[in-house]
Length: 445
Image (cartoon, rainbow, N blue to C red; front, side, top):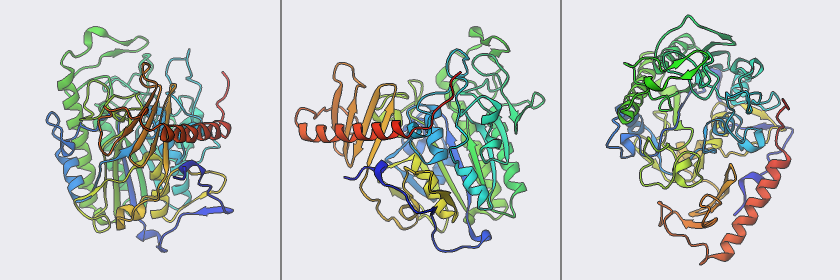
């Protein structure tokens, strides 16, 4: 099979156009990302512990994906891939951007990386982002300098849901490129309220709103809790909830309710049929959540680390109640959205993703391709039903699974299929060399 990464996107400028549409006919885009939400954490994906009626309705009115993957197995990498349409390794964000100044706090999404928001703004869209950025702490990396005309949220990996402090105890709540200490409230509610306000303000023109929820990421705080971090200190151990399962459920519930409010305002403004809503998670759940029958958790390259719930809803365009079993990945969303928005990206910005536009609207199958994951020395390769896992299990560094028969990755076929293993290892080595060679560099401290 041909490797996705070697599909060279050429021409002087890369138009991703469907039928010509005027500005008012292009869809609004609502892109919603949950944080650390597992494959088994929604009731429409079989959860018995979390009731998510709003997302269930969204799935019933649109398309539910069963083989959707985040490009990363942790936060920052997936977000970099999502907003650039490129493997995060190529975009220069192959790991978490940490708040700790002793680590890589100085890293961020570099200015030569073209974002989805920049492309849509150039095409006449109003752009807003609300929630978690996690692509750079320094002011130069602020979302308002990366194509978003409005930003309310935080730039770190997580904040106290009430005190708005990051893990090191630094205040982290922004209105555009300035800290805002006046605004108080539960983060999930604030993200929802600002997103709804933005939609109201932009109802007369095409808009792109990126809603990056903190839920269900640590710290585990429901809407009735109190702050558990202190400025200059960080976590206060005595303030942490002991009933994490209940807190997790409450956080998921509030996010679901917030998504319901977004859907409601679109209906109120008569924008439902001209708006694509796409929901996904940035990676699999940790051991506090549920990945259903999948093996592994966040940070793993087993399925539990990157197969995530995903829903697309666009009434009149995406058939209601449809189920997509195609293998897709989060870096596909940028080329998808650009095609639907009749927008373009400079040819120098090599997209690694593949448009899902006709898959969603016409159920047209995707071309065969190879997909890769690589994080912290652990790697995976996907070709059709076959998945090669390298170095995730230290006792068995080479694992081969047929996901069509073994979704739980329980039967290692590596010794029975040596030629396939060799071919997939070679594909990974070629991909790794290419994305490393072309990677956007990060600044030295």
